[in-house]
Length: 129
Image (cartoon, rainbow, N blue to C red; front, top):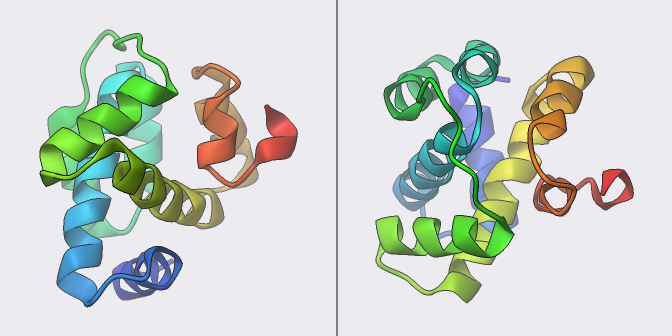
């Protein structure tokens, strides 16, 4: 998936005003996700994302994954965007559903294997939770 296609999908799912807002939300969600994943998994994810998004994931990745649940994930996204957790829930869903469409099935399974089952819903994969 190309960068402009990725952002167009996020923009449509999240009902954002413009591409700039979709880009801001995408950057925030991916940076929080990168802190939640082990370094090698974040790197594999970055490799399957469009070029401009790769760098943000790589900058946020850490050797050891932080451990936090869905509620904390939304709280961190809200803090980065200066919004509320309820809005961050919508933001997270728009971005991570697009991630699920953009990466291979094997990569998505690998990524979800490093996260608690409640995270699958955020990727639009409730059946995997």
